[in-house]
Picture 1: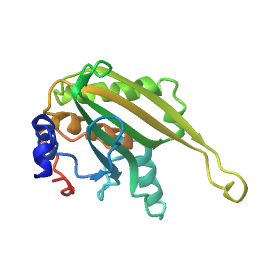
Picture 2: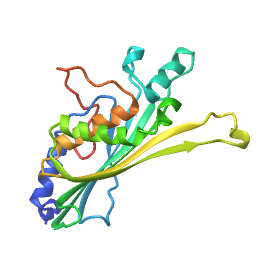
Picture 3: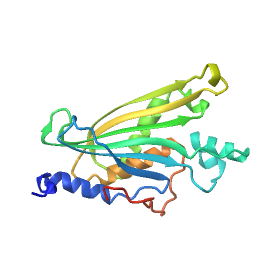
Picture 4: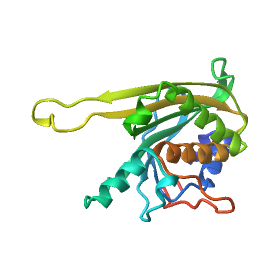
Amino acid sequence: MNALAQVPAEFLHALGSLRKARCRSELRLDEIPAPSRLAPYAVALGTEVMAPSHRPGPASIHGPAAAALSRASGGEEPDDELATGRFILLYDPDGSAVWDGEFRIVTYIRAQLEPEMGNDEMLGSVAWTWLVEALENHRAPYRAAGGTATRVLSESFGTLADRRESIDIELRASWTPASSDVRSHLEAWSDMVCTFAGLPPLPDGVSALPRRRTRWQ
């Protein structure tokens, strides 16, 4: 029997909607091993946000994108990676009282910040606002959302003492989509990763195009 024949139709529909997602060209999106203990069915995607080849004006960028371009202007090559993240879609045909549904989206984003932003006491609430706004902007209906924002200070010692301190922001969040059509949720999350990376939003009327096809496409 074909393995796909044993996969619930609702989960197959969700996978099909993910394949239709149109993400920004700065993202490198690939399928990664999905957790096997959280739900009977799951798919996981990993992403990296790469520095754009062009140089936008200084007022349009912030965070690690601004730092990368600043280093480039000083004669150094900019770091390629601005942010990383994971997007996991879980499905349990029996449903979950904790999820309030059969599906659950679990996400993770990490990006390095400039010291001025990293020391802002409101950073956690700002990160959560980015998530909520991204879902609203993409008209991605959801419920039972929760998350944790963490600032990570890295200090180096000994032979690495010449490295400057760095501050990263990590956001772990999950929510229950209102239906099996989760395309808009992936698009919202991908935009949020770009926001964490310090990239400016796309201008009105400009469509986001996928950078490359993933293995699950």
